[in-house]
Image (cartoon, rainbow, N blue to C red; front, side, top):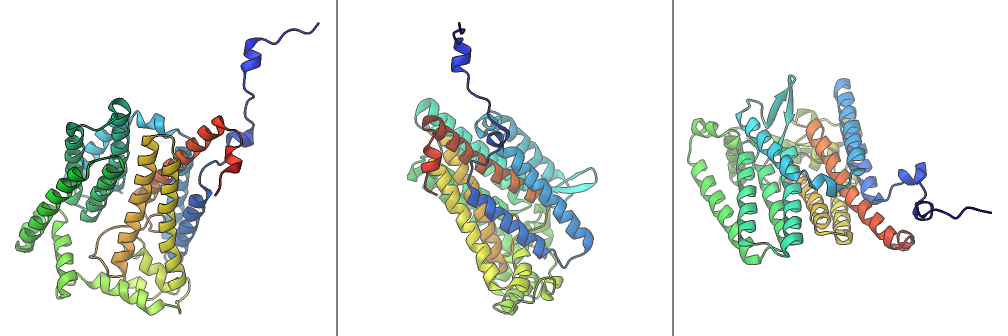
Length: 393
């Protein structure tokens, strides 16, 4: 006589196989885009010194490792640590301001840029805070709105001392998150109005200060001088050299690129593998690859929006769209600067520009974006096991 099955054996779920445990349930298009951009970055450093190429490959591997690890951690559990992460971001910001290293801090004798880490943590915290308040109370109070605005402004002001473009990108991303999170247009209006007025007054005052006085405000003097060149085209001080060379590299290429490793103008660009990666790559690969890179970031934003729409909670929606907008905004500003459509900034091109911290943070951000999609897919699969197969791509 057979024994009756115990309740534990009836309700127990079969253990997932190795392939089920590591199956990729997130957005494959985003992964393909990242691989494509990373391949272009390898092509960009192809003609440089051997040690630079090896270092760049190491940074790419670390970025993909960070992406893989973050992808397998539920973003909702990481969200519980967001207050602690914000404290870490504040400490990093203070250390960066006090440090003598440009845009970062020195760790074990090596310069590490911190603004990408700080920016990502602030975006993550804002998304989690808004979602938490909406979950608890159903709406955001006036105190919540003021708190988030002051928090965002304080971090942006600290970053602006050393990197104005990163501060602007963070502020714009924060405002976008506020809008998606349900802030009233009236609140968004006075936020943007106050910051815009302060920024305009600050620029006017800075334009009338001497270089010696501007030097007391970190890299603010460099930003003002580059801004002045952009509007006046007066290059007597040499602040437009980089933009002129970048524009020349792009104009020289067109439909007749120099070919991989044969760029000439890019070798004169002082930041050819970071701030002017797009111009360096464009000179050697031409307009077809240049346009493909531009569309890659626009597709990334579209796919991030799709993940946000399908996310199961407010936190996932805000985080997914915030990450997509933040990375795309960086890319568009970088490309705009390289084409001389915007004043010179120190903005890198995500997954293309060389760099340790920027690549690693971008990898972690994409890993978290993919995790939002993965969690949403798993939730739908629990409700309907066949939903994943019927989903339209």
